[in-house]
Image (tube, rainbow, N blue to C red; front, side, top):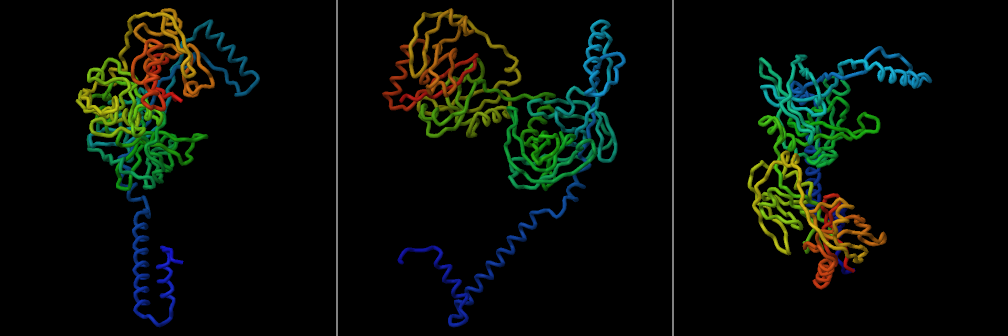
Length: 501
């Protein structure tokens, strides 16, 4: 056979090595090659062995003095008067409960106050007494007591909290400098890296557990979630404690576990230090968070939406609405796709929200958007998200005449005052109402429903059926496979790409 086989040269070398005599130079060369390979493998194994810690004892001894136990006390109101002792599940349990309810309704006994205690963990980040923990550890607490590794106890005050990331910053006053730990680069942590968790699990006192980084960039339920997943044992009471890398740097704050029984099954989550440090800096300076606000509503760019817009790839954040705010002032429009923000590429909506939130309020940033087949750069001066969330949107008035037609499985109707009143559509909103929908249509499969308001078609506002039909025909003539439709439901906008075939 004349075909080249990449394995053949190796086979020839092995054959020469096995030859007892006849070609001594070749045999020596082959033996030297094998020796070199053996040495390389040995060195690799040595390097790997060095990366596996023989013990965590030195690391634990070094960082433990900066890890604290946190005990909180809260006043909880309970019904007044003596309470009967009835065994749980007893046939008399319901009788006594009804009796006590009637007694309270008649006499209205004053509620009694009892003290409720909770336990958690935390860590000192400066010698002057700043301590980081979880917000849920100290939330609604009347008293917060910090117990140090040495056994010393100090009362703490709350500097500030951030429920969005479940981070709280505390402060204690000490006559002597306190041992502390520093934050590391959580972005440098790789899946498979060793980590160590320290805390107060189940109220047992200082405890150390070790494992690896199981996954990165996990999101649980929050807008700013960036969790490190680890199999290091984390249990109740570990909340607020540090997750260390092998250099003794904090790369996460232990916050949550995934468990069917409340105990560790090797799936724990630590809020990444990259998020925590930004929050802590703001809490220390302002006592509250001050996140950047772009002032747009957005959705992810799917493959069909990208095709309808003429984008080469499904990436970025699609703007569905631009209310009064920084982006409107900068000239951004619904239908724009945000590709880069302040010099950073935007992969999806989650990434954009995090980047914007971590950008300083009042900073002027360059935002590159894709619009009408080309890119444009806008200069946006960021507002403050916390202020925007407290704002209340306003509305005005308008009016029109009735007409219905079926298009792409949608029975659309032009807006009338009667429809506005029936559907609760603001007088300032314009578009076409989906009066009915074919349940076998693509539009139904993509979530459109009767009562939805079609605001735009192919990124052009439509208020009449004729305008809608014109946009559909124009998209077909342009060779588009789909048309992008902006839909509002209960005031929330969403783009949907509908097939034209």
